[in-house]
Image 1 (spheres, rainbow, N blue to C red):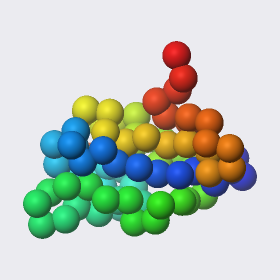
Image 2: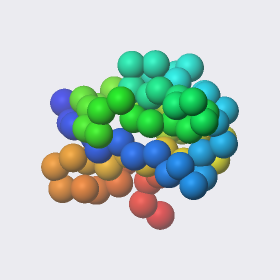
Image 3: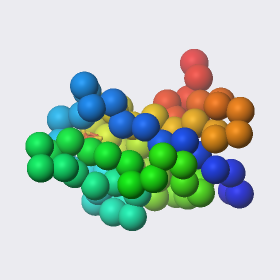
Length: 77
Ligand code: SF4
């Protein structure tokens, strides 16, 4: 891929399922209130990150190109 992605978790939406940590433990962690946090605000694009965003049951994770800001997930309608 080669891109860099900006990673964000909407903690008003996150229900603490932990699925993102299961998909990409290197990219997300749960705090003591079981809220997910990206480990880094910007990461190299990779399949695990995309799988985590796609797998979040409440679509709390958004990915955007770090260079330009175009949405990666959820994709633009
Ligand atoms: S998968 Fe979604 S709801 Fe579950 S902990 Fe991660 S961000 Fe929160």
